[in-house]
Image (cartoon, rainbow, N blue to C red; front, side, top):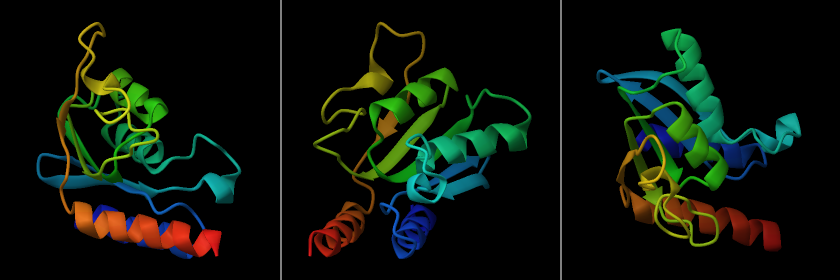
Length: 143
């Protein structure tokens, strides 16, 4: 999670919403990314999406069924859908997202029993540090 937060700070320094994501498998970091929506002018360039794509490229397989994704903000429905489609084993996030969270806050897409795959979820890891980073970023934008 520390690496995800470092990536989130890098995103903020580039004017991106401070989200970082890291994919780990067999105790090895295999992929990482931060948000690149502004740089790419692509609404799908979320940190989680980029990290999962890079992990699949590294593994030579779209299946991430042995991988854990760490991110500093609860994923949105797009990212949660990709986690289901990649068969991600586990999601660990820092801060809940009460406006768009799809791992329990607004909806619980990643654990929806009607879908063909459910992701293990653990939230609240380094929540204070992540929340402070996100709040600081948005306060600067508003001012």
